[in-house]
Length: 154
Image (tube, rainbow, N blue to C red; front, side):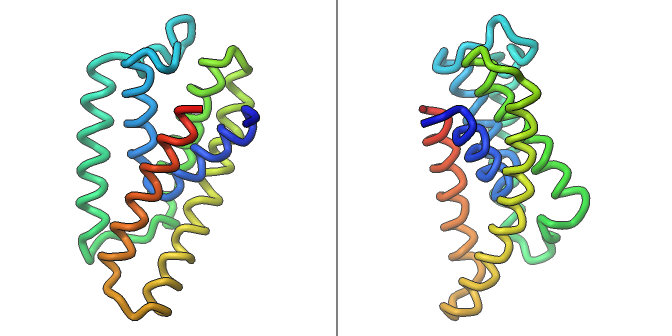
């Protein structure tokens, strides 16, 4: 699979859940699956990054289930998805000795597309299937984590 597809894909996963993909990337770097040691992004391999991103990912998964949680396409949540998609993709590019800027751009674009597509798909699935949003949200959580693991493991 090409670096472009991997970077874009992890960006899409960040568009679905902004903090799960960085947690996956941090764990992969910490465990040595992604070599970021010669990169400005080497902080992602630190224990502190693993703990922070893991806790934030758990909090995000819980917050997404709350009825008062805003839309992911609002400016602040969308900006978070763009930044985290860019960060995750830049890490994949760094581990492959590719230009970080290209990875960051691909991830940011993937983050935007993932945010809007995920929002629409979730909205339509809830309407069409007549199930509670929480069930579709949990499915979306699994998809986001699964995609992040898939793209990082490549």
